[in-house]
Length: 270
Image (cartoon, one colour):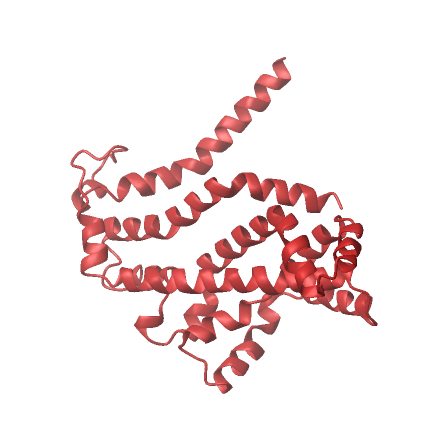
């Protein structure tokens, strides 16, 4: 009983340590500049104001950055759901020469650090004339080795009898994949979709080097540049920007967390 009590205490302390900076950021976004610099500091806003959010969307160009992040994250997520599911199905259920060798290649790319391929990828995208464009931000991330691995593991758990039944009924291979097998992979698709969206939304380094004009900046890049420019001392504006960056993905994760944990549990057991 005493051991269980200590475990709960450690869990609560850990939760407070993790949540306190986030709560401070959210509450600080509703404070005035004077209150943010007040000593001793206050937790709850004494003169709550939404001026920081008003300045964020009127004076700063955050609506444009928000649209850029949304377009890039949704396009990358859609591409991963389509291509990773198709490749995963082919590696799990189709019989063709070199299938195992191809899977080994996929696993090998999964082990390569992203920084190793960063410079060659930048040169390739630049030479293709895609720098400072949506295709340059999206195309390099439409397929991920992790997504292929995740979907392959899930497809392996589905019975081959479903495929044989579809073939007996005269369904095409594409029809078997799209109408019979793919609807059964909703937990894995939800997991892949959420993780891909989170990764793309928070991606900082690639948009930083490939987006060369302000109209192509994403939210993390814009927030980082604002924190070092003339607004570096405007803490209320920066906290409001950080809330705009974090809250959408936090809400999405809370809504779909049941599917994420279910998908990870199912694929992790195979």
